[in-house]
Image (cartoon, rainbow, N blue to C red; front, top):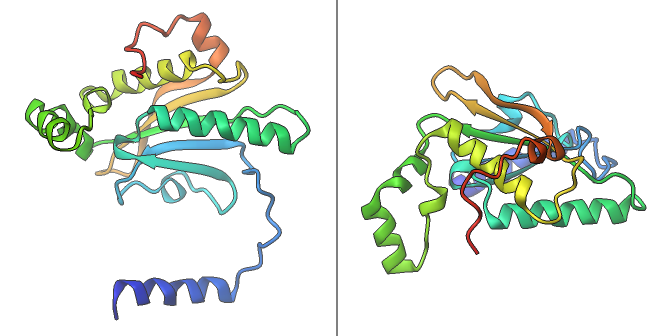
Length: 190
């Protein structure tokens, strides 16, 4: 059986007992998780999430990129419009992991090749020190226009060898992070 056919068969089993078609569009936990594309890192398994509880966005390294910021701001506006202007802030969880392939993006030769061949600059998203990189990502959120003060953010590091998460940054509102002046990190490139 091909992978495609296996996935279709798995969906048929899922759909046979599916009874949650009336779930609301807003995630029950009002949570948005930014994490890595790595197949070993599935927030539903790691954090015990159920269908409809959280929004998950993934990219190389689970970094806060310009695209991630644009997605969060857009979601905030859409949720605000859908709820008649009610509070539209999410709880943002930044979830990186050990043994991440994005650590290779710190290699100047790889950076040069990606820049030269494809015009892709990965230098500011390379993972060099996960705790510091997560704080940089919090800074990017705090300094991004359109992010509500009430938006909360926290950061965790998942250990792929043990299955445990370690809290790197506690839950705080962006207003608290702004007041603490987290803007010492590298600003987002245009």
